[in-house]
Length: 287
Image (cartoon, rainbow, N blue to C red):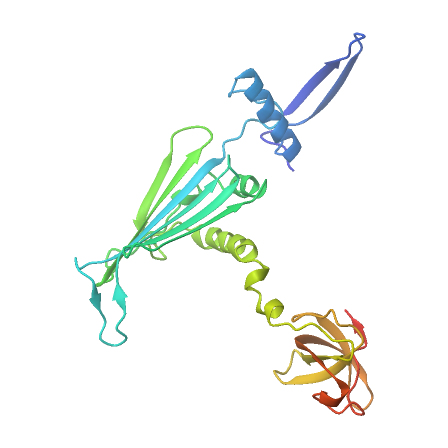
């Protein structure tokens, strides 16, 4: 990574038990190993102000985002068109460097509460280090004649706890121009975390709907090509394919090798084959 400041450097002299000295030097930078060592030295010496190897940069220690949605009327009401009931909803998103956790909580006025906690070692620290302490203070703001929603109030509060200095709190209404300019990029990255780690294999229908292959079964794969939604059935000598796998299959009278995506995998006996065996083609290879 590039050096901090104007090429600031550190110099270290190591002395072994025999008195021999070894001198090494390098640029002050945010190398993960040097950051960890710098934090350890500051902690052991109880000197938070030391530059050490990383320059003691300021970064977000904890980031908490509170969201509130509530009807402007004091009682619940229903829309005539779809009978949708509006009630107060609270959400909280917390990214904490110390515990390396991402925590998302949603609480409804009905008493229902949903909470997801992800422990992502090193990933939360790296994520927070990439965000400037002042990043959420950059707001475009609405035009003076902007009209508020007539039915629902949506508000947010972002609390940034930095390593150095006072906490920063940003508040506003939850809409495009009142949110920080960095919001879209930030929330997309958080969504990626939740999407990647939020659900496990017990929710995967491709697993719990998959039947075990019998010895007498043949493997049939339905595939589709990029330029069409229509599916085509191919025979396979391999039974480990899954939905979404890319394979090469023969197409047309000249059997041109073409890339295709598997949509479903089925096991049938020769007598129950979904396509005549004397006409069906085979998958050429696993891509």
